[in-house]
Image (cartoon, rainbow, N blue to C red; front, side, top):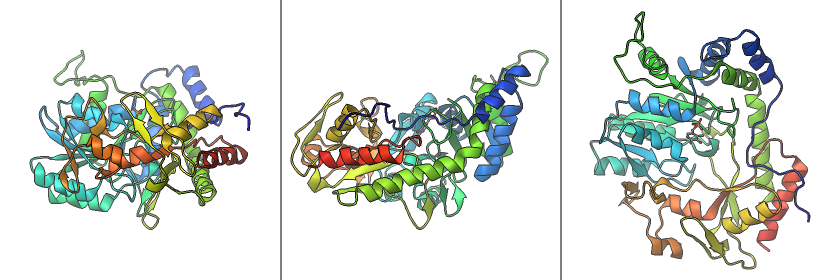
Length: 408
Ligand SMILES: *Cc1c(COP(=O)(O)O)cnc(C)c1O
């Protein structure tokens, strides 16, 4: 088998032409700044699509999360319960405000924050007032359970819906459940502006604050008058043009991502693997990334250090390192699962709570594959597959074939 001539990607931008119309219009009318029709329109469209009252267009999803953390009133030294198996951008904004992330282990049914571990965390840290949860890979988490734990402990829920735009839970879109929520238009997301993000809220006062903070916190005075710290976080009207051109294709992108997921699921049914799971009764993911989880019994030995990985190939078995290296050799891009935050050098001294209580990755147990927390286990056995919607069915069949060969 020859490598792919054209690289098969994990997830890249997919443009449709309309983006160019809106960018060009911004150029021709000289609205080449952080004000303009594209911005107003994408805020309006977002509110309409997601079903929220206010949307504030920002330079990035990370900026939106930062302003959510500020709105939640996180002060230096405050602990915040955070999703553990996620992209670091979920967590870093807590630290921007001097907050201290305490990580909550993952559940196996949706790969998101475990509400049982969250309840446990409130026993251990009853003073905590803010929870930051992400919907990983476009799969809604256990929202009802998480919300009821938050309500019971009077905690504010911040929802990181950066990866899950368009996904629904019990008929409502992700990005409507937290007190404050963030979406992202980063280049690899389900739709993109090349960059950009939004803060979503139903609270007019919160929306106005976010808008003001994002534009350097100018007071209503004839000169530059400042009473609060400001940020340069507003979305550009050019970026907004790209987002505006992408929005009509959100559903199409989701349908294509779902078809990719289902094709993998079918293609791997005879292998000792499962796909990233979701609540098939209550949720409809956006299927942003298709992921694999290898059965424990079918794992060949694999060791990961801080920067490098080694494995021993065995017949009938494989591991994420082998599959990722093999895909790369065929010019296809996969990726490891987000390495849990409690395993990251920058965060590993922070609190970490599993269903059993205070936990910490135990190196010996990690190697033996026993007594692990859920995040470590999924990180060890899981990987993200090429999920680009421009991948053809024929290309995907080859990817499926490559994975089969790893188990031979
Ligand atoms: C992409 C992403 C973000 C950050 O969004 P940007 O727009 O890239 O700043 C935050 N959280 C998660 C889970 C993400 O995947």
